[in-house]
Image 1 (cartoon, rainbow, N blue to C red):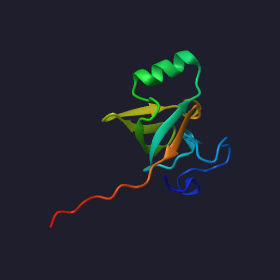
Image 2: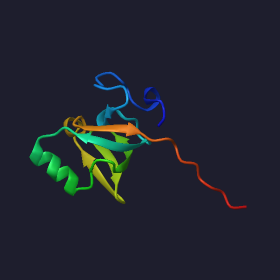
Image 3: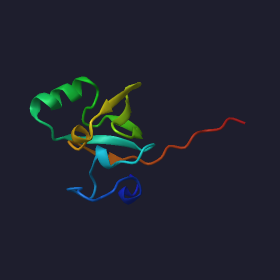
Length: 98
């Protein structure tokens, strides 16, 4: 896990190791750890692929939070992204073939 201070604004983070998805910088890969939305909303998020332990990448943080999940890009409102707690993942290195 990388230092959250680099990838997440820790303002408003309830735990040092978790951060709301809405605070994660674009380009960062994260793992979902907890959904704190209402039960029906949490169920719908899981149906769309936002499950606990699922890896997602934040693509953009404009008006909506755009995430790459299960080979699809999905947009979430800021309010909904606040209910998804994540941990950042260590950057992966690409292998070059000589």
